[in-house]
Length: 333
Image (cartoon, rainbow, N blue to C red):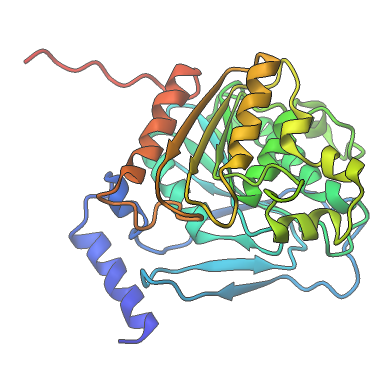
């Protein structure tokens, strides 16, 4: 069976056989594109687009036969909106991974967006620039896009029917590093304002870091992310400046951490170091470790395993932080 045939079969099964509200089936949902994409910057990103970059989407094989795309050479940072059929005013900004080499679209982006939109959130998926591709801002380029994304989302509060005080940022893998630098550097001056949206706060109200890249120090740094962010032979100062655990500060948003202990790509120590730093700073933090799971699973292949619980754990934590609406009271039996 060809990959196209497998995808068509998967989509048909999703439409006719699978209950869409179940976590285990969300990675198998129909592969239709969302309807609305917002460009982050009114013209080109700060400093202009480096010569020779050409944004392209690359499709990859995977054992599930699902659509699995990544964006290479991002030149037009954007937000893709997923609207809930029953919105509760909450917001999730998803920042997918890709080792700062590319930006994943489906596995850690659109699939999670469909899940959280089904729970009532308006979800925005961020396509961000990659720091090693000649941008004037260098390592600050992803942070520029993340700050701008939160501000643009808040500027659309009335239009999108959202509560600008209930914004959760959720980052996966290297996207977890982007989210981690945003939660610690939401007020850093990394670009000049371009319009009225930039007068708004870029501070998330809560942050979820899912198997995040965090440290730039060896031996626990993810080699690819480290190389693409700060180069082949970074100085000790650069390693510290871009390690999320070194950036933690009192008063930053509360954090949810999740990691598998057998993650060989991004060792669990990344989350452990952030957890300890947050505790020392007095920042509210909840951490969940799973014995097995590896890296980069998102919602795929987790049915029937302990990992199946993680999206629900995020929902429960988000309710406790005031992001998501409370669960409806159950009728007495």
